[in-house]
Image 1 (spheres, rainbow, N blue to C red):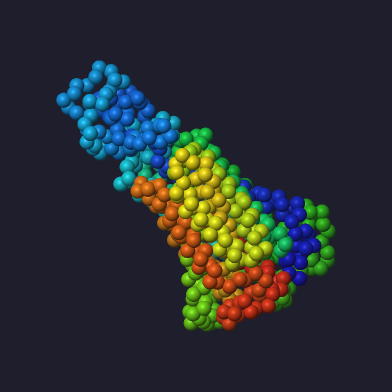
Image 2 (cartoon, helix red, strand yellow):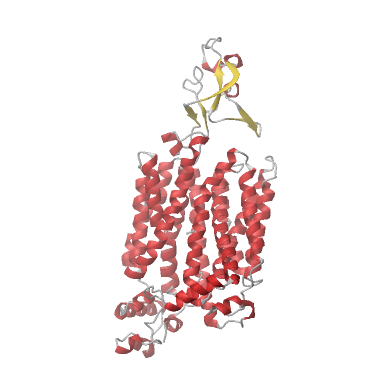
Length: 563
């Protein structure tokens, strides 16, 4: 009897599983908030050059600013340049009252300034550490890149640790690391320490989503795994959206950081509240602990366990048989000779290399565009907090769209169509005039929905194209490569300094190319998962899968590189 059969008896998603699943979803909410809090803590507030002789106990918006500082008119409102001001005409005396500063006091020449006046209300690290002007914007982009570098480090490390020491322990450790480093960030005395602890915060954050998924999904039946994975993504989207609302209400980077980082300290009680993964316990031959959890699950679900199930947990010398309950997919990673042979076979196959290059590009494309759109949303016309919140919430219908269409029209057209949708709307949005802000935002939201949908499809699609023996490693390699796109994404908003349309055009072109390349790949829906190189090469000729194959396909898509 395997564990899925036990779940059939105690209930695939009963009250016990529902309660614990909801508990592990809550840290995911805060992990999402921590992962994108830097969008506002390291945001660029409105500021302008300080004007000597005029700026004496004055504010950002003064009637004479357009006379002293160059700028442009946006929606009938003057927006001053941030780092330029007109040169003072020394032949004109200073007025008695600064409010009467006039045009004759300044020449038509401009100069760069070294002191600034910030608009009242919003406070970010730019205010505190004067990270101003375009030549310093790389520092703000580096905050985002440091975050994604932390994700790369943490995701690999905590996956190994969770297999060795248990899902629950490492899950709680990740949450505490996230909370401690996030709070320290709020009290960082300088930019360097803020960025360093931002990196460490991402290291902890990186383990929260995948371990929450594993803890939640390993305790539910096979017919409920897909929906639980989708719902976990919903919590992640809600956490992202919450950052926009928190920033809108607080508008102070220290308070924002504390609000998203301090509450997770409460999750330390999870060490005593949530159960360890039964599958992991069985893999480690800790039968008695596994038995206690299964009995508790049955009791909470109102089910009486049969003798067949109870006898399964008895220790015996037969525990090492291939068909025993203890034989689970969780084993020490060993590179077997047949794995090397399969890897060599892949590199000798022009067909598989061609498909692999396309998939690698599209993984990077999805990560680059997904995060690029999230970061660039604060540069759209209108309320940046509302725009960011909407761009985060649109992920919910995006994941739902992926779930629906990849099982209706197939993986290939779902992925290509999602990328085309993103590409067309991004490129179209780049050419919309500034006075049609609602249309620009609508196109932007549709583009984000499209790239979110592509993220939802590419996990399954990639897994279904690889031979069984290298399926997990192959998807893991693509997931790691995707993070290269995420590392670059924080620098894309800098292109706004050259022209606001450039980032959207770039996202659109990258997505369109990805969608076009996908059309050269075969459809995998309704096909048997390939076990060998030859089956992978001739995937369209494979017979339809058995139920077991479908389950393998779903389990191969469990992890998300963007989390």
